[in-house]
Length: 337
Image (cartoon, rainbow, N blue to C red; front, side, top):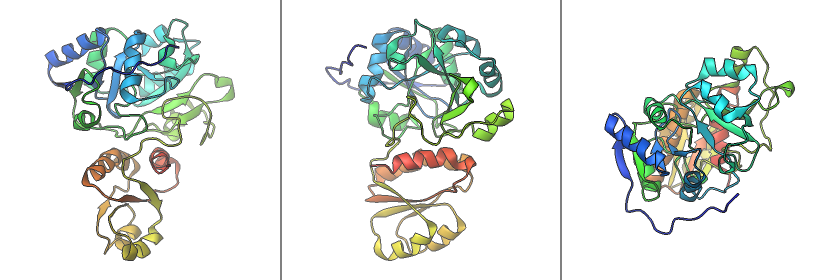
């Protein structure tokens, strides 16, 4: 694989394009077909997109993010039938999952076709694919008539953005354009499901909005428990999705003692016990007590906390249950320094 070339000079600023405008979406597609990087909204987080058939364009993704070249990317497709253009040995269960969950926040790990550029897969023989649900991204995909590689539109290991404004703050001088499609509906990255060897069972490699229970109900199969694994997929590093402000996970019963000693911290709480115990703390935000709503607010809240300049973020541990798996996954990575 060729080494990633860093940009020789910064752009003045990315073009700001309105997602609801057809001419803006056409402009985004033109830039992508010309080999540029364009940030697009998805239902999960904003994605840094490039033509997945163009190795030079894909290399710009890694340069803009500062991402290691051996980290694979997700290829976004306009419709499930395009899986055959990118993947080989596609099992029947992949088509079932696509019928149930696409368009939507489920990514499938499959074996790649030989002609898929190595820059997209990190040199691996596997490929992550999904059909996004956001209408702006889908429209641009159809105009491009190609798959788009699109990791989250943030510097490597930083918080994934859920608004176009956040993208402009971090990557605004490193990309050709940012398409504003409003705030993302899910707020965290897609679930990644391993289908490369279904004889050994199905495994979630990255928790996300589509839960283990959702997949088991759709397939009638029990998933393998994969809390930790060594398979290279997007987001598979211990320290990831991190705010600039140090983040610490705390239990509700620690809050009373912290109220007397801690200053300059923001406390994120969700349980009635913690809300009651947080009386007297200088800065408190009450998070939703439902996992989907918590996920929606998570990155947005952490980003706003960064802007407000707190010394530390103290986050009450969510429940350690399957429904909260994706939120717990992101918080563990955010707290790993």
